[in-house]
Image (cartoon, rainbow, N blue to C red; front, side, top):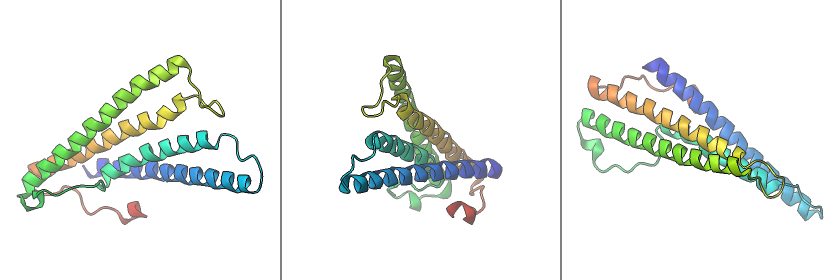
Length: 175
């Protein structure tokens, strides 16, 4: 269990780092465009198109890390007071629900991706293929579903064993 979980943590952490880089690039492009426009220039052609693509990548590349790091917003409705095995069951059910949600997003996204590809849609300013905007959504949603399934497996093992099967997380992951 530990090697699988650690590999999932590593992959999700790297996807999140790439997502953070995309956010940085979106911010830099926007700032550069504002500075150029303020100085009297025309700005950067395609800033909106590029920024939108980077923000899509940011969102969907960071969601998997939220699952594997268990850092999504949660509301405790008394689960913390239940016996450990029931807590593990509740956490497993929540992770499975998250996986189903992400698979639904991927499924509906795939339908839309096919429609956009069939129509040959392009972005307004610099004519990027609109399918490019769907790649991060599809990849991120499927990867997030896989991460949620790994989390569900962890809680299933916890429920059956009566204890968490993993040692404390590596401090390197948080770095």
